[in-house]
Image (cartoon, rainbow, N blue to C red; front, side, top):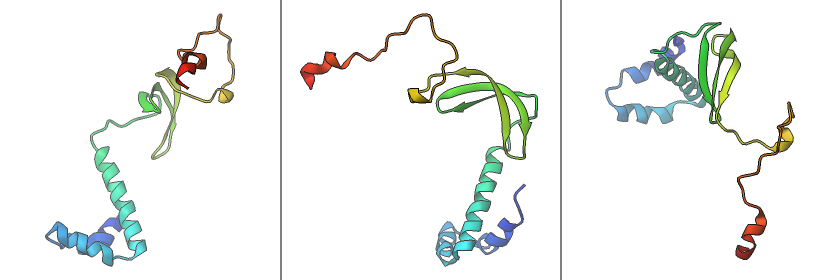
Length: 125
């Protein structure tokens, strides 16, 4: 639910009859008022975006996308705005600097890179 601050901050705006009047009023507001208005509007927008979503609870199986990967897992814990998900399935491809990888198990044979060696492009350099 949106806090009462929104009503206080935009009370003068509510009496306006046109979008032009609202836009004309914004420059007259001081920085703290604009910051508070922006915060409250963001919360209202988020609330409206999530109004039709089913509630998520601990123990639910969920999926989401992050950095081009689809992650599926079970919600382990929650706060009011965040959930910790124990990932069980990750699908997709992700590019990462090799020095940031830790070897879990070596493959049976190295896989050839899809990128041709630089020597194949010598005549173009």
